[in-house]
Image 1 (cartoon, helix red, strand yellow):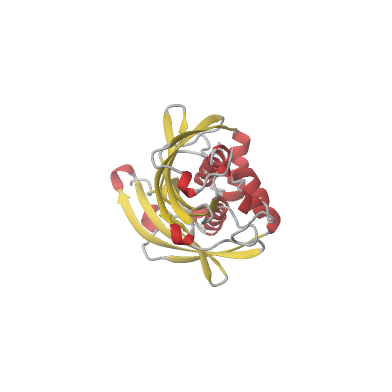
Image 2 (tube, each protein chain N blue to C red; image 1 turned 90 degrees about the vertical axis):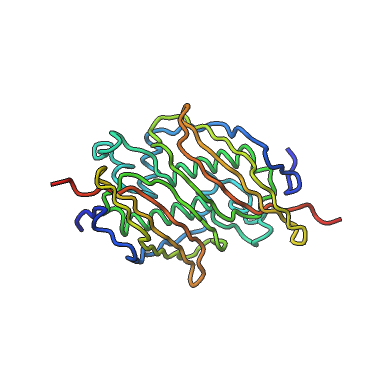
Length: 146
Length: 146
């Protein structure tokens, strides 16, 4: 697939990002490293949910992996700018299949800087349950001026 | 340190979260797994910044680790609710020492549910340069009713 520049991206384009199987071992290992709270790492200590649940940092990393592998690896991304309205809508439990979706929300070209600010809405689902919703923004290169 | 419940948390409390040394190897390994875009994984391919820069997902994971190890491991957290206004303010380069800070912004008690919604503002710095700013929200248990 050829490189896609800011001018090639269209608001409204939706994409299925594919799926990722999150095992119990991976859930706990990620949390031990990055988010060692008891309800992420210790099934016996987890009161509220009855089992460990995934760290939000892990959920975001999984979304990013799906997004990049299916889509953004072909975009001429300069760098991410930020995220807003990241909502962990439901607990992410072990041994679940997570499926991602994204939609381009806006493309604001800055021709004098040969870049565009691209905003995407993203989501992760476990079955029919949405577990993550977020909006992300990144600068993407425009084609070289002719 | 004893467990801290929602009633124990006060808006305005600031905390130094300590620091984390991010090596080049770790930066690239994390990105290869979670965010395999060329400017995160391939120093020779990285045009704009002249070197690899850390994935935003990695930057967030480092902030979460610092936050939990210094602070939230003593909080009676039920679960994170979300993040807003996550801004990647400057590129995070390899072999840098990152220092975290946080401030409790608001505590909204829900006594009938024995929990409070706690909002924090967080930041990461590389030297004097702020590289990350975010606001996070989590539910924290209140003490059992007497």
